[in-house]
Length: 530
Image 1 (cartoon, rainbow, N blue to C red):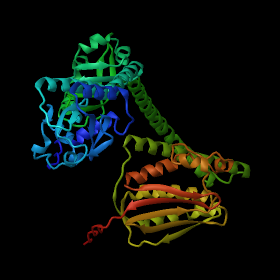
Image 2: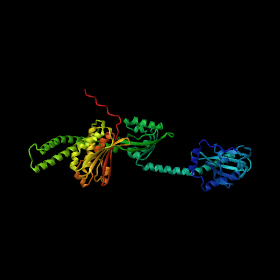
Image 3: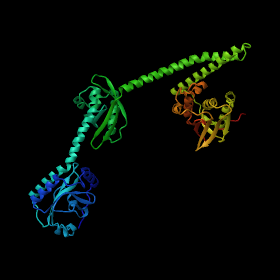
Image 4: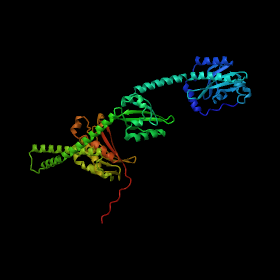
């Protein structure tokens, strides 16, 4: 016995078989009537609609056989699906492929076999309509044609459900194309539009017939045509198509910005695309950029115009407060002191606004060089000694990482520490300490500022680094501040290649952490003076 070999396209064939959804389903009259007719027409005791899966031939319909399936290794149908024509074995006992086959030497004692392959919609042979007899016999050309005709009838029934599903799917696709607000299309890789959703006509004003008769490139703005052609060529080469935008001309002569997402089936030479009209979005983006530019120019101009007179006012108030004009009455001295503090607060606000504007426009100067962070932390702690006394708190310095160098702008880094320390001292209970710490963690340098204050309200945590962000609590408002400091601090740290984040616990305080990559190369030695 010679078992049937596997077809060269076996995985595809098995997939087509499963898609039929017929394996191991109950008997159906639409198949049963065909095998009954075949038994009468050819006067054979056994007729079968056989489906061949990985390991067996399973009978969807049968006459004259009680078992529902047999092993594929002993099947005649396994041989029949290998050829497109009717497979005939006139006398199995005289055929070396089947002479010692158990289906020949035992029940049902097959001597004659004729089977015609049954094809799925993709052309894959999934089984046979076959005739079996217990005696050897000839099979004429006319009988072959009759069996082929009956097999065609079986194929119609096999694929009836698939065709019905295809019609339903097509109807759904047409409804989807009709109702979609997006501009759906199926197009050739040369840019010819083959099927369009109604959104194309609603957006561009052309009829569907006009659009189908007009290559896409003819609708595209001249300045975008070359990029569009290159995009289509990428699809033709089978490459993934990136997100893409171009302008298309509407019937009224206006130009619409279309944003594309598409995928390509190179084997079919077809592009499946979704385009969206983003013209209004583009207009709003342009207006927003214009507003931002005008706002930046306004802020810069006003800030510069205010800073000069305010600096003079602050200087004059400082001189008066220092007694340059002689002793002042106590009430006047108090008022001068309040005015002096408010002028300083306004100058800090203007400086913050200018820093923010420069950062956003990329005009803020940085002088990045290797700096020893321990020395910078010592400067920051010393600089805040007076403010700490004012707040009734103290700054505690912990340098756990010695000889810790990082690439930073020294002045900007001190500005970051000043913001973090002043915030921590401002919100610390009297008598408490604020810890300024330097450590090494996983190959990075970590500078942290830890307070023992009330913690950051949960509702405010997500907004804490936003511009002008301040917690809404009355106590927070009394502490003052512009709401810009942390936004600026994070921007400065990120420009120096680091990160700024925080952890906080209600009633237990907050720790802000600056992480920076460590500079492992030692700084160049200072030249000796002669």
